[in-house]
View 1 (cartoon, rainbow, N blue to C red):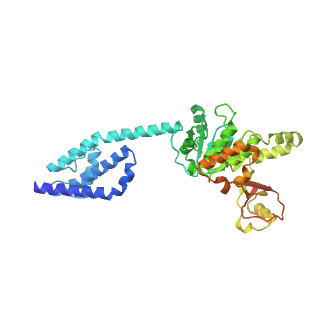
View 2 (cartoon, one colour):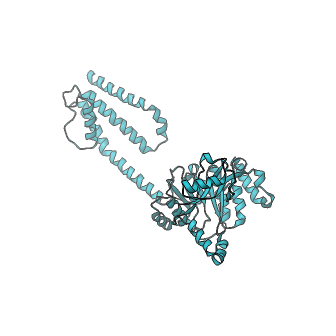
Length: 400
């Protein structure tokens, strides 16, 4: 009995040693699910049983004489394989073996069933757009309209590695059809109103790189789409001021309001249709050229490319030669961010009610985004060969 007590004491000490080495993980485990805690506890019990069997059986005259034998016996017993090559011969060893078998038969199937149920439930939540997105540096497309296919075609044609997350209130059957069409880029989906901060959190807005807000017609009604675009821009910028936000609006009069809310770029729905229609009648070649330059399926498109550092401070004509000779591209202009706006610049008296609303929203969120970060990008097309390249500019080219 004394000898058995000594062995049991050694077992207790071994288990305590394992627990002590794991103590730094306990605060983290408390925050995890019950299932994960149970798995950790079972793992510690299994390790303790293997060590206990080793101490008890190594001098009992059986086949378990090394720690390796004990762990092999543990694996075979838990898996209920029953090879019979190693087994305990002492009374204490058989008690531990019985405990281990009961646990293996009773709890492990429960964990397997629970794990399968969790995976099925998670898959179901993902299909319904209710699962938290874990992506980083991703692109979020808020809202839905007839342009969504062309936007996704463009992203697919670019071949970028950034993940795409769609946030809208589109019916589940239509959304699943869209996801299947673009399974090559594996877009993810969050179902909900993109003006809600909770829905944007599900899309992991805080770690997004680019956010597109479309004129939303998911519910079949365009009324109020521009107001929702303003609210969506405010919500995005309050959660992630560094994200690049591109917004589409129906009415050109809404463009200043969206910029005041923090949008980096604003596109007016159908803004250039009159120009294209006029040229279709008077100079059809212009329309053909524009269509090709704006299509991802054609060979040449309008692109933005970085300017090599050695050309900063040099003339535009020299940079033209570089792109023509080195990159087989035609330089047509430059893009820069040259004007920084303060609150006094963007909150004009012409739109006092909307200005006050936007100003109040930023102040409620404790943000000073407009006064410190908001910038208007500007394009400088064909500035002339003598124009001097600045450090904050990028090239606009026609290339393959």
